[in-house]
Image (cartoon, rainbow, N blue to C red; front, top):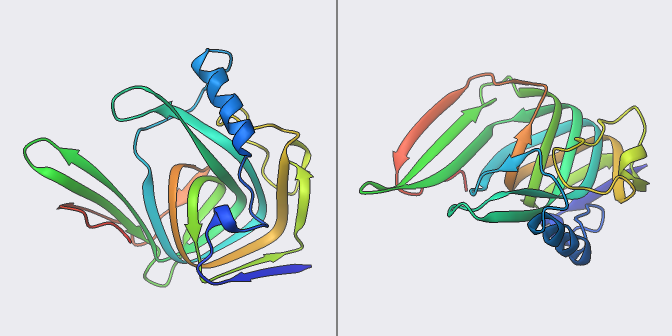
Length: 212
């Protein structure tokens, strides 16, 4: 079975892509503030932006969770995310950027680029914690919607297991392949077993010069 979505689609409005419910997110946030849940993965107070011409992911698991950490003032913070996990991913023309405010200098943009010279970026066992994503088209092959996140089978990556706050019995979807074109996303975290960046480049510039 193949599922195709076209247009400037935001993950929060895309029925096949899930994020945690408002009630679940609120409950987790309260538990964290009261110390009832331990967070072994603490995200920074800054999200980052990513663009790519294409993300071709194999053996995908997608489920909702909450990334916890601190804001820029050091206070506890929680961010609802759609966690996209792939056993293998190929990313064409990758750009990643984050803007940091530096006293006296002002805003400074750090931008990383790779996979733009005919050889895509390759990643194994990659997890992307997405707050928002837009694409011109997304195609899912052999997709199963409504599986339990913690028992989706051996073909897909397991849940991170402490890397985020998520219910293993919660809603998830899995697919043999996901091809997402003209990617624009905001994320809180990315982790991978291996991340091979062909044609890697890094640049710092004054001002806001993000990938999009």
